Image (cartoon, rainbow, N blue to C red; front, side, top):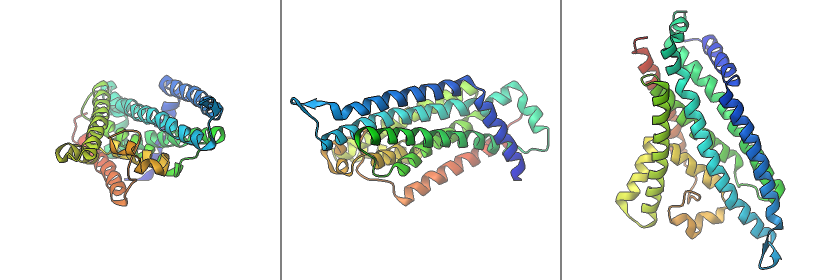
Length: 284
């Protein structure tokens, strides 16, 4: 396997993305949401409580909670975007017959799939980094609150997107574009719900329900990475507050461990390898 075919396929995939209306709509809506949330955060220091302006400390706490809600929405946008961009990346080419012309050239199936993955992953990472950085900057300018580790939060959100991207791409080697996208979105939502259930189980010391969250964090690490992002965004006092002990999806009691981050990276690599194997064994 050589780098040149990967570079060509990745470049073609990235240019194809830039021509899609879905991407144009996503960027336009993201800019609109950033403008609206930036304005909203700028109004927090001017709010009144009991007839008096919020103190700077209360304003920062309010901003922190609102930021968690905004980033929760953003995490779903990233996950759904990854799924719907990856769904037709391989399945669509197979269904239309374009893959026949591409694979007839001296390009292996592994190079084709990995090139498609790179061409989708790099723009997704750039989108997460730019959008989240702008949001964090707007919050800091408007309220004075800055997440304890914005880079770590962005990395976790990007990792969540890569998990969904890789899963969808693997599914698209066997399923149709629409089916693989829908299945990936359902899995994404199911992992989030199961993660909340597991957090409730831990809060109320129910071993069986708590195990559900542990299993889902290992089965598909999307919710586990979201919890990492939450921990890096929230004020550290939230980690010990009662809010974090009732299964809230907007709080986390601990951050990422090196072992879990290594597991998430290995998960992406293994699923990508399974996707390559699946495409290699499929009749085109």
